[in-house]
Length: 302
Picture 1 (spheres, rainbow, N blue to C red):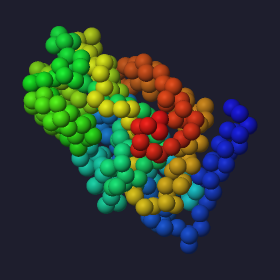
Picture 2 (picture 1 turned 90 degrees about the vertical axis):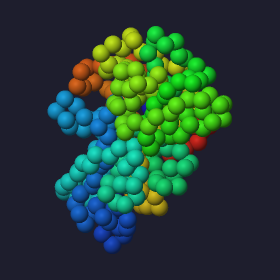
Picture 3 (picture 1 turned 45 degrees about the vertical axis):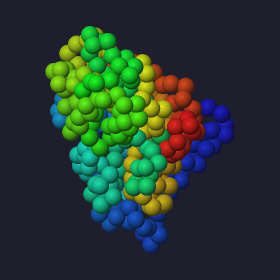
Picture 4 (picture 1 turned 180 degrees about the vertical axis):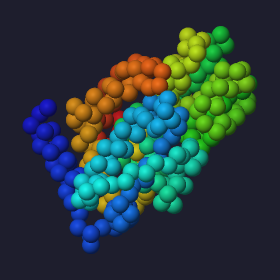
């Protein structure tokens, strides 16, 4: 690590851990200080970001990031103890639950885009993905145009279902697009033949395929239906003080050896509960994103 990087890391860590005086607190920091608790929203099936393990406990890459953020908030507020509460969320409920104060952080596989930034805020990007589709290998589907006239499923409330609807209309492909309540249900529809393809973020599709009974029976499209898109931890909009703490904590983590080790733990090693390995080493774009942390929703920034 270069000296300038090391100094920046120290500065960010200090910023994230400096205790705040009670009279200066506003927004979420004040809420957390008064309640002695911070609430994390987690997903139950967004492998490997946030999901339930064999004991039905939340685990995952994004979930661990949120726990480290909670530690930074605890240190910043000078608390001896911080109760970390957990609240399940879905694609459809995550933004409303952030907005109404039910949860303070949302850890999952949430795309940071310009539309969502009008409803919520995001901290620094922790992953880059793109929209693709998975289908049974025997169907021979690989390009977007191969979906013409096909039944396609995507998860309700996601950017992916919006994207495939827009593509369907723009190209006149005549797809029948069905919404699913979650990723597991959507993949099951492909597995059982109720849908020809499932459109979703490529990393989530890789996880579903790796965890299936017959991974070799599926293929993920070589053609993407979107540009690379950033994932970020979501928090409430217009809460600059809280965001500053979260940004400092995540930037310090992502730039550190600990951040790289955390990535490798969830993307290049066997993960619970079945020991599947996604075999997704950090890309060059992701290495750059970690080296220069950003909360930009613009794919061109990466």
